[in-house]
Amino acid sequence: MKLSSKEVDGITIIALEGNVLGGPDASALNDQLHKFTEKRKKNIIVDLSKVQSMNSSGLSMLITALTTMKNAGGDLRLAAASKKIESLLVITKLSTVFELYPTVKKAIASFA
Image (cartoon, rainbow, N blue to C red; front, side):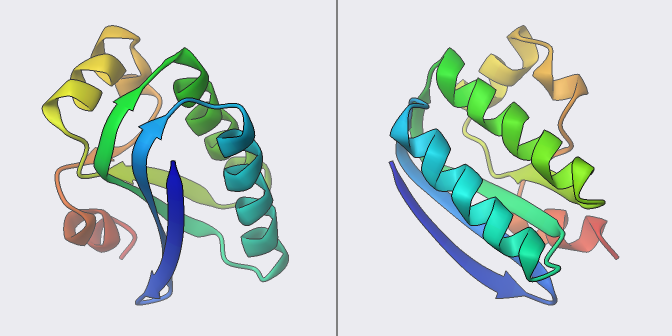
């Protein structure tokens, strides 16, 4: 998995790319989120548009990320998930836990 981030309108966007399988990837994401919270960046969007697949560890990684941000007084939203990833979130009922948006642009607007 590749991870990159940028800021748009005061919102931090983390783009994940490839296969999200937890393990060392989870540590990389968690470390990144802690750096953001230290800088008082509390509104995070995870761009899933380039994620090919995700397993249960990848889902757990997203849940941990959401918990980290909520505990810091912030929020984490998911954007641009493929049909495959979206159906995985629906089947696991995580679509009721995360705020899902069809595009990063709509996710950014949701923070307004």
